[in-house]
Amino acid sequence: MDGSPPRILRSAVLPADPEAVPAFEDWLDTIPPTRPSLGNRIRLAGGEILDNIVRHSRPAGGLIRVRLRASGDSARLSFSFRSESFRDFVRNGPDARNGSIARTAYDPGSRRWRGLGLVMIARLTDDVRYRSGWPKDRIVAEFRDFGASSCTPGTGGV
Image (cartoon, rainbow, N blue to C red; front, side, top):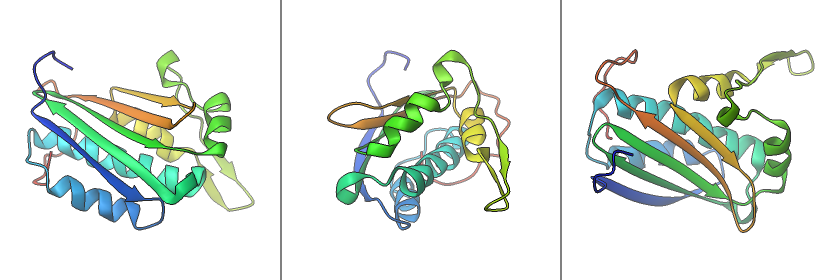
């Protein structure tokens, strides 16, 4: 963050079910826009993070807390939840802090490629951290907008 007071600080509690992503997008639409290119990246990466939490982590209690802090040309999006399976992912999964990117692999059993969403998240964020621990697990994504963006500006929130 740039050290100035946050212009946006919002949080919400979302269901840990398939309705979480549409609810997340509706929630983002209630937040005043700062920079369209930043908002697009938050929407895409945040939706993918949330979908991964719902599909793969199976949060205990059926709830996920999301928080957005945005100021000037940067934003931090965090997801908090509790999941036993997330601990294994953190232990064995991608570690963006060390610069590694998730590996993609074809899964013949499901006839699908795996890991593409994690690669997308890594490319859309400037930093993403996966943390497992008591009392909650967290995924924190950092975004910075330096004026020029490879994303096409939109009209939605943030």
